[in-house]
Image (tube, rainbow, N blue to C red):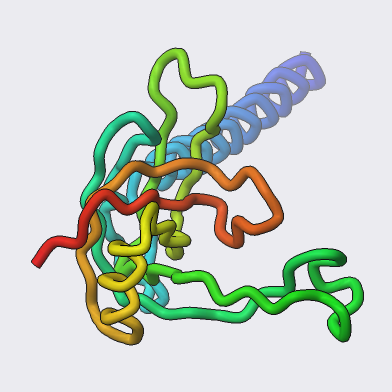
Length: 166
């Protein structure tokens, strides 16, 4: 009889330990789910809200610091730097990352998350001259966002400039 009682006590202890361990696992899972919100952390570990934009045909207004950066172009796009053309596109460096999302029915673009740089594409000579004045300065641009399609597109997201805003 003593053996049966000892066996029952042992079984109860084992089940109690398993149940406690399962609660700890559930708490870890819950914590992981809570931590995966729509916020992100910057370089300092501060939580920031990521602003959402939409790909074309929506018109967007974005701002940041305009720079140029050298990229290798045709024919080898960097495979043979001695013969490849050097391209210097306009790049908009954003203050905070953004998400660029597709709209329903969009078959040409895909969601891009935590975008920090956008290539600026002036659509005419007048826009090129205006944009050039802002190199290494802050600029606010209105236009449509689209996804990189060719080897001349050097960021995942580009903006076709409609106008530069003051």
